Amino acid sequence: MSTSPQPEPKDRPARLRVGVVGAGRVGPALAAALQLAGHRPVAVSGVSDASRRRAAQLLPDVPLMSPAQVLERSDLVLLTVPDDTLPGLVEGLAETGAVRPGQLLVHTSGRYGARVLDPALRAGALPLALHPAMTFTGTPVDVQRLAGCSFGVTAPEELRLVAEALVIEMGGEPEWISEESRPLYHAALALGANHLVTLVAESMDLLRAAGVEAPDRMLGPLLGAALDNALRSGDAALTGPVARGDAGTVAAHVAELRKHAPQTVAGYLAMARATADRALAHGLLKPELAEDLLGVLADGATLPDDGSDR
Image (cartoon, rainbow, N blue to C red):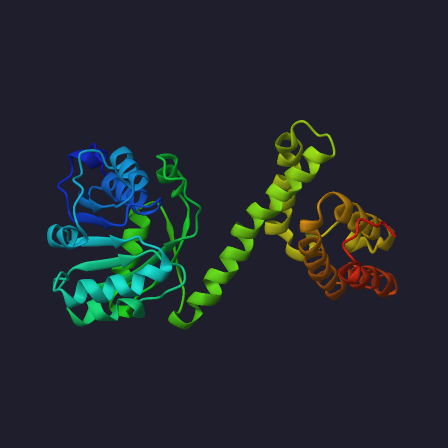
């Protein structure tokens, strides 16, 4: 094996000129990761003051330009705009002739596969859907978090190696998702990540109401262990009063939530029912206890929101 020193990324010849259309939280971070791999960001578009600040922080000295100018200067273009904006943006760029034959056009939407880029494909572009399964802050820490991050990848078969190479260069791991499975894939990620934030925030609010001064410190070890157990063991990691069939405890929970945080009752009941179903299906919840528990959950859904604790 050769022991000769390898050049640092900044000393390597730049292979692709990278442009970013949409300087939200994702685009600048991905462009910065590609820069570490030896590519050269050359242009970025952003409208809001926040997007311009992100671009300046993560891509210093990269000029701000219009989307058409970004495409004109770039070999690889990252389309990092909201899902609902993406189809119209692609159509507009293709119709105005901004797309060049042989240009790599990459979007990062979880919802869409490669077909949303068909207008650009007809103009000769090479379409890739590379969705990082990660939450972004819009700060340099995002670049570090890409190490080991899975990317949901959808692309024509002939571009498979290109897609894999780009993901690996950004520090990620490619996971192939079929075109028709993209909406389900994205729903799964939203269910886990987006709803987790809501659950944690509500839990912290309730702990504060109960007098806990540092709910984040209390929840950190508990939630960390729960997440680790769930990832390792799936449904076998279920625990707590629902999985045990403690109908009385669950009834007390519902009563307290109705008094102190009625806006959380619907979510608690929905998650408790889903937990009970999974615990029952996997033999964790005894059938003889499930009937009383499900009865409490049904009664809880119909109780008037009047502050009573029946």
